[in-house]
Amino acid sequence: MASRRRGGGNSNRFGGGRSNNNNFGGSRNRNQQQQQNTGGHEQPDARLCKFFLLGGAQQCQSGHKSGGCQFAHSLQRVADVLVAKNTGQRGRGGSASNAVTAVCSHKDESGGVRVFTGTKDGHWRMWNALSWQLEQDVAMEGEVHALEVAAGFLVCGYEGPTPTLPGVTVGLVRAWNLANPATPYDFHISSEMPFAHLQRTYSVQLKIDASPEVYTGSHDGAIHCWGFDAAQNKFHLKQKLEGHVLGVTSLSLFTSGGTFLLSGSMDRSVRVWSVDSDPKACQGLLTKNNSGHSDVVTSITTLSMGEAQYFLTGSMDRHVKVWNSSGGCDHDQQCGGPVLSLCTTVDPGQKQIVLVGLVDGTIELRQPDLGFRLRATLSNRFSVGHPDQLKALCAGDGYFCSGGADAKLMVWQWVGPLPPGR
Image 1 (cartoon, rainbow, N blue to C red):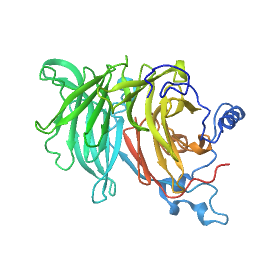
Image 2 (image 1 turned 180 degrees about the vertical axis):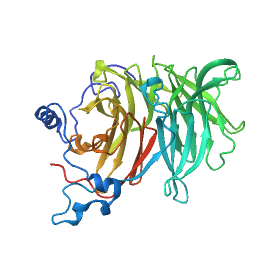
Image 3 (image 1 turned 135 degrees about the vertical axis):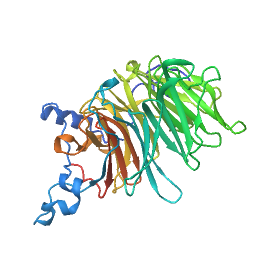
Image 4 (image 1 turned 90 degrees about the vertical axis):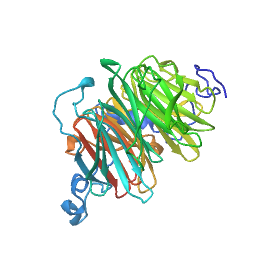
């Protein structure tokens, strides 16, 4: 594997540049033409029935009339939960003080699903996905910025005080074994530095295999790799991954001929780290110089299209970019606003759908095999969706969850495929 970090050729893996290998329908020109024809606003080619979305078939009166409903009965909102009392006050970063900043879900061995939310009021909460009753409410020492759950472990990244320096906040990380949550694990750099990062922890990622690892990213630009020491029953710092010069906003694992850690940053770059090697090393740097973003990278997710593996990056520059496993940019999609969150789901027709959370609260549903065409939207403009920043998305089997600056968790269930694209 080449370790070159810059470049425009596709022969260098993760070197950046463009690729002509496009599995996304070749519809970029169609999207651009549609935006020109509609005054710069791309229009969805499927309209979701608002009444069905909010109340089911019994609320859609048109569905009982001759000809049926002209809108799609593809999704239904099954939960609209006020996670925390929304004071309406604006906190740091411009979002409401009790904004939902993180959401993830977990299916236990019995098949029960729990959804976890993290909020700026300093709590993570666990919700029963059948009743949507609050089952656990855990107060942290400061704002929660990241949650991740895998293999029965929940990891929380947050900001809080350090006992050694009164009045000074640092980046903290705590983990729970959900089968035995009474004794959490705190992540400490050392006994002299009893915290995980010098500044608040923005992102976490779990790597679960024979040697489990936890990766955490901070506002100070550092990524820390943690391993579990069974003899001492604690997590220890294995390695610092250095390269970003501003906050690490997102982390994601990517598997294609090896396992890689993807990191997005406020420094407008994406770095690709080989985590199979020892020590772990940066294998690629994607910036504006090689088809990357021109503003803060806010989110990263992965996408499988047949046997091909891709990763997607979203940015405040309003673009979602699709990268192949050679580091080439296979698609560049302009969205309806700055992008805050990304997630992938599958509709009942087994079509991959990319969910794009925007700064105005809109969720765009885009279909990759149709050139990332905008298929539908969930928007507060039509009395569905969040009215403000869409900061968190996650998906499970047949559903997806969204969390916003309105302090709400919304859960959307697929009940039918989206109509065929025009």
